[in-house]
Amino acid sequence: MPLRERRTARVAGVALAALTALSLPATALLDTADQPGARALVGAAFVAVAALEVVVGWGLYVLLRGRAPSPAYAALVSRGGYAVLLTAAAGRLLWPGGDGVAGFRSDWSLALVVLGVHLLVTSIALWCARRVPGAVVAGTAVAGTASVLAAVGGGLPLPDVLPGAGALLPAVLGEVVLLAWLVMVGWDDERVSTGG
Figure (cartoon, one colour):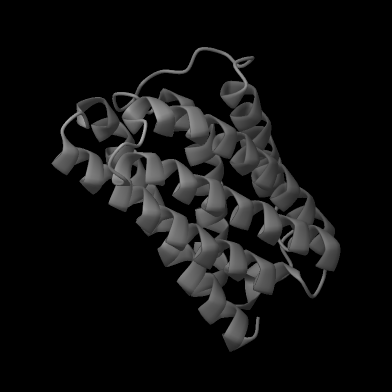
């Protein structure tokens, strides 16, 4: 695998690990974000997550565009859309007079549907690019489907690993699958470039 692609995978992998590590405690703190200072802190954390989402989306696009240009572009756009919606939702926490946690949760539920669609589209891009083992493609697709179903209320009840974070579980699992692939591509040598 070319060094440029390995570096891109490393940057995207670090960004994905950081946004996952930041989003889980920020989600857990939502229930205690009634005070203005706490609201601003949680809102700023979600804005940072949204910025990292753009980095991950671009990295996935760069890695997949050569072999699957259309689905790679759709994955970039859907991840960018999630980042925009997440930033708008965080605005409800940051601006005085915003609807606070209730407004954030309402807007974020729509954003999570877009994230689920992104995971589905990314699984298609990964499959078309023939860059990863089938288990990674399947794991990403299952996580995307579960995320969409959970966000629209049709999914199975999910455990709250962290308070308030149960709805995130499918998306987090999908992100972990993508992270594993990015780590393989970024830090492993040639043997991962032709994964089946």
